[in-house]
Image 1 (cartoon, helix red, strand yellow):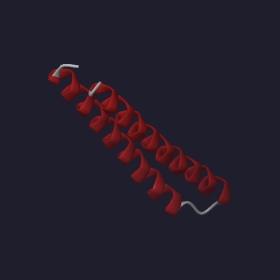
Image 2: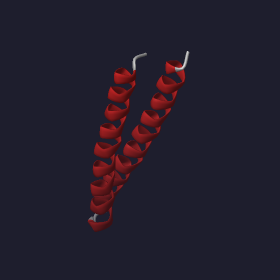
Image 3: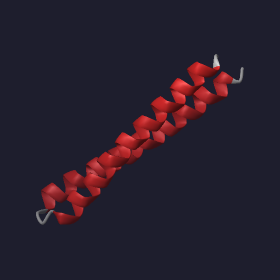
Image 4: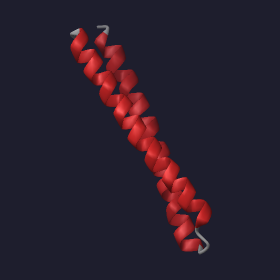
Length: 70
């Protein structure tokens, strides 16, 4: 894979992580401010989903980067 392609992938993963971080921060703030249990539970589910998405993105980045060296 060309250096430009590696840089593009790195930038893409960086942007994705930044966007997920913003969603996570807002979901955590919302979760802390909500007073009713159903809404707080839903916000907690969003937090868990974003954390899962961040893990998936990290795993995908690792897989792509290890495949680059082949």
